[in-house]
Amino acid sequence: MKRTDKQDQIDSIRNQFDRASFCAVAEYKGLSVAQLSSLRSELRKVDGQFRVVRNTLARRALDGHTSVDLSGHLLGPVGVVFAYGDPAAAAKVLREFAKGAEAFVVTAGVIEGSVIDAAGVRGIADLPSREVLVARMLGAMNSPIAGLANVLAGTLRQLVYALSAVAEKKAA
Image 1 (cartoon, rainbow, N blue to C red):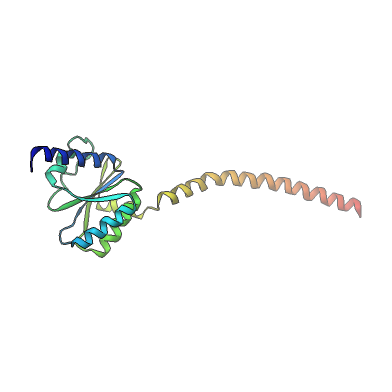
Image 2 (image 1 turned 45 degrees about the vertical axis):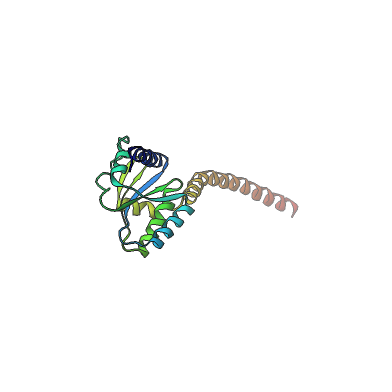
């Protein structure tokens, strides 16, 4: 491979690491082409990508990142998953794929500049989707307001009941 081609690949990998909201390093040795194609297809649905990278090129691409040190995980035949959308959705795809493919093992990940281990990637996969988290947060923010509205409405309701009782008493 020519030096200019290597530099182009390093720049491409660095760009993908910069754009991605979540990355995961996975061992894929023993998987068939059909299985890898299936994984790539599932990742595309959640705005993700699986890329087989040369370890030395990936290390050089990561040299510019001060907080990201995946050099200990870039050993042997590995691929990198780049997720540009919801990190939890990509991690769920990896978890589901790993259930059906014993040879696929996630070894590490990067989220928001922090390196996490395989257990951390599983933890991200266990998170609800972004939409569910936003809905829960909005519900939690809305509940005090709804409670206040119920208390105020209850006070007014009791006043109306008292006035109607007085009106019935005077009418009778």
